[in-house]
Amino acid sequence: QVQLAESGGGSVQAGGSLRLSCAATKYTFSRNCVAWFRQAPGKEREGVASITTGLEGTYYTDSVKGRFTISQDNAKNTVYLQMNSLKPEDTAMYYCAADPGKVCLFGRWSHGPSYNYWGQGIQVTVSS
Image 1 (cartoon, rainbow, N blue to C red):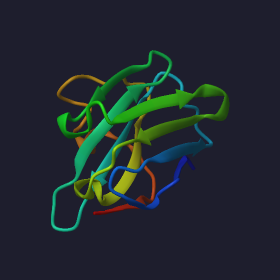
Image 2 (cartoon, rainbow, N blue to C red; image 1 turned 90 degrees about the vertical axis):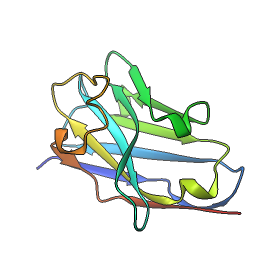
Image 3 (spheres, rainbow, N blue to C red; image 1 turned 120 degrees about the vertical axis):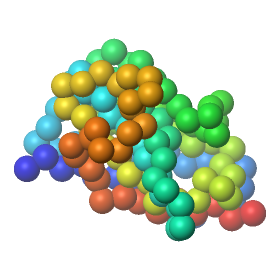
């Protein structure tokens, strides 16, 4: 059973940083589209960033460009989301998702139903 496990969330003041990790078990992040999504209370789920593992092509939603960085560590089978200059509007539950065998594509990477595997989610809270 493929499992994705997020870690690294928590509470931070505005302007602070957090690094989220998405570790895969019984699954290898090799040439897959892996993405981070988030969902705040009362809002729709949105794609935050994606990476095609092995190729390292990335996409970001406009609101996080220049502040967030998605990266991978193949040796650890882990994808990271480094979040800097956090804002209260970044507060949400963050989810890791993987689309095996697929390259992240513009216009498709942020479409949640495209992903077969999801983590349980982790809370990020940014206070002003």
